[in-house]
Picture (tube, rainbow, N blue to C red):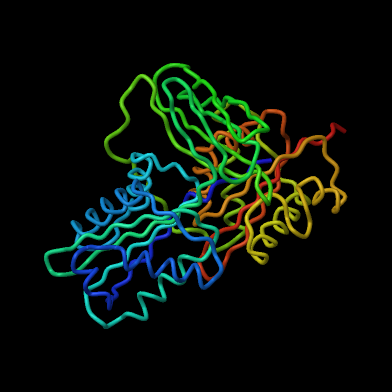
Length: 374
């Protein structure tokens, strides 16, 4: 069972004004950091560690936004993700927002309110960058990440050290689309040789076992035998589905299209599995967690058994996304999730989608099974 990374980045573009005029005029971010540190302390949350690599990516993003008149264009998420990866930040769970402000007292409450809403949660690292425009307006990018592993490339080897969770393991997708297991360990350290199956882009995924089951700790590309691109590739996505039923149908079509391309038989929709998947998606939304192991109902095996569903084999993919297409693309970009979708031994799937009304985000659960032959 695997769970998809929350790789989306949330941008809240605010026309606000900061009272911290001295720091704003100089582009200094220390007052923002101090305010965030105070908020975390007041909420009994761990302090956030500053990361200079994230700072550099944030400054580049603020400058890019300023150059296009302070508006967030289509592809802003891809650009920021590209800059983070380019600077060696490979944390799977990232959250970012852009603030547009002028020095002065007006709008102080709105600015602080926006920060208060964003910094809650189990983040571990942060970075930020401010760019001053000619008109006296400032553009600030603030980035938070949840760092579970430390990853370092040493020549042909990739070394991983788990910071949170345990049992780190590696997965790779080769340029041909084949998924290769890189092995794992019961200790916190893991070093493996990169698979060399010709030049091209290799997608690398690091997984660990956390409180709610397996989770993606890092997801990033490595280029062998060819230079890395100098600019991100942006994909345009239509507005997300507001209807859970429409999102479920779209995901089933995308799964079977991917299987057809790989010369695999299509999966059949199973309504009992779909009901179990919807229940888990709703459980995650209501209980405020994201993972395979429910605090109330347990693992996938336990959840299926409680409903009297008997199967030979079962796997599960989870996603939290703004649209079915975006979720599917992220799952296919993840080697471990791709392996499940393209598993030729599976025969049935149940897909459950629940919409979070406040944000429009889709909680997605996909239950894949192999049934006994009748």
